[in-house]
Image (tube, rainbow, N blue to C red):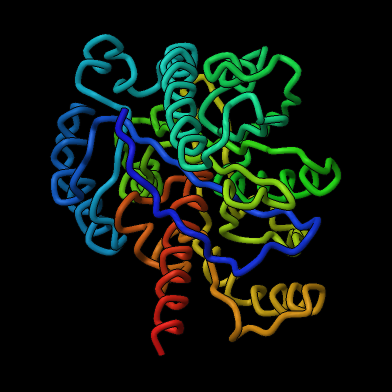
Length: 350
C-alpha cells in the first residue's frame, strides 16, 4: 500500500463546545498507479478485448473526465490467478469478494493508522468505529476485521455501512456527528475503503455505459477522527460539522442503479443525472443554509466530484484520484482544509 501525508494545522480558530469536529485525516492507496493516458491500452489488454469501437469510446471518455491519475488494486498477477474475472458471464462474485475483503481491510487499516498518527493521540482513545464500503460483503462485517487489524479496544462500539456508493462517506460523517455529539468525550474513527475489482468486467457493446466507470473510478481508503471539545495543545480542530441534512427525490431510485450479481457489482448511471442535480441542488442548499443559519459566500464548499458533467469546478480530487466513491470526501476535505489554511495565512499577513 502507499500512503500520502495529509496537511496538518488547525483551520478553525476555536472549536465550538459540544460540536462534532474533524480532528485528523488519513488516506492510503494500493501500489498500482495508473496514468490516464495508459488506461485504455491496459484495460483492453487485461480484458482480452480488441473491439476498436469500444476502445475509441473509452479513449474519448478518458479525455473528458479530467482524471489524470488513479490507484487500483487490480494487477496482472490477479488476472493470472483469476482469469475468469475477464470472461463475460461467469459467476465470479466469490473470487471478487475474496480479493476485495482482504484488500479493503488492508487499505482501511493503513489509512486509519495514518489518521491516528496525524491525530497525535493513542489507539486506545478511540471509542467508536464507523466503517463504510461498497466493495465487500461478509459476516461478521468488515468493521470487525478492521477493529481487529488496528488493535482497537474490544469494547469500542462499531457501525458498518455497506453498499452506499459515492454517498457513503458523507453518510458516515452524518452518523459520526450524531455519535460524537451524543457521547461527550468520545473519539470516533470513520474509515472508508473501496476497490473497483468488485465490478471489473470486460467491455461489452451491450453495456457501453460501463466504460464511464472504467474511465472515472479509482481505489483507495480514507479515514477521519472526530469528536467534540478538542484537547488543548494535543488535538487540532480542522473542520466543524455544524449541520447535517439528507434528501431524496421520489420516483428517482433507478437514476443510479447498482446491483450485486453473480458477476460482481454492475451499475448504470442515467443520462439525466447531472440535469436532476442541477434542478434540485439550489433548493436543497437553501434549506441547508436556513437550518445552519449561514451565508453561501462565507463558506468553502466541499462537493463530491462524481464526474465533470456533474461538477466542473471542483476538479483537483477528481484529477488526482479519480472518483474514489466513498473515499472521495476525504480527498475533497483535505484540499478544502489546505485552501482554508492558505486563506487564513493570507489574512494574517494583510
